[in-house]
Length: 146
Image (cartoon, rainbow, N blue to C red; front, side, top):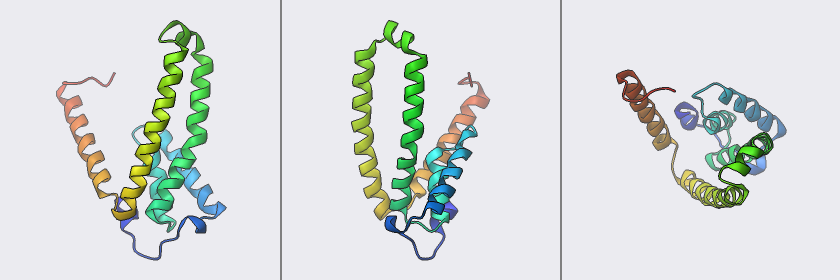
């Protein structure tokens, strides 16, 4: 992601996105099926390599998440309906979903403003540092992988 973010050259905007760009980025999303690979990281990196600017590719990455997350939510709601009804209940679950939607919307709006003026370095450093800390905690036995 760092390399893709720092590749120089003309950057294309949202209006310049083609179906081939979207297909390439969508296929890159499949890489996130590998544990430990960030879905948004894979799609953003792919879009940057295709020459899209940070805002366009970040927005596209989140748009690509909508079908996958919606399908996962519907699947979980159907397959775990009994657990939800007998556990927390449907009202709190629906309320939590609505609150989560608005928090995500505000977070994404902030992120789009941030990436318009900054590169992705801070996010890359955060992921590497967090990964090293988690590996150290696992290796020391302070936390368990299960």
